[in-house]
Length: 218
Image (cartoon, rainbow, N blue to C red; front, side, top):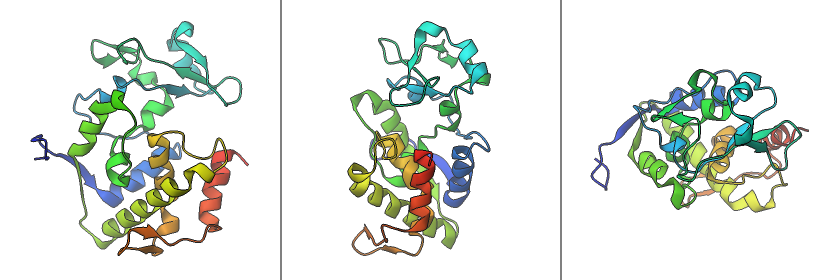
């Protein structure tokens, strides 16, 4: 049970989850989240990015519900939410375009917050925050524990340096902050200080620079 008296949820083995999350972020697969009927991410006032290549998705969303994505090239769109903070494609508590849902939705996994320790943004997302508090990862091997420490170190690094990162590269919200930590965690394996909780990493580490270059499209 959690401190709130809610039953905990099995998040799976940490390294297994981490590998699957990286595949999803790389576009090789979608996230397989054991939602169990939870629609917190669909009812928490979240904007959903839809890329110009997602033609099947765009064809199924009424044009009046989409608007151009700020600071992104033409063709990138954003799906907003209704007055209650719900995705307008959520009908009778189910996604009406599930088989053609946006890539953002396919890769969304609230376990990234439990994995990185990044706190949820805003009062509108209390349902997601509650769900996150219930996740519990397993650490059956040394690799699981090593990967978790590296992810936490990467998250601390991102939190300290996010303001210094170029626009379009640095995280704009908690989700992007957690995802960036996942993407660059390998740079922190074996390069952290477990006693004071502060990452010890060379700012010019090649893997970190590679992740940032990929994000900026250069």
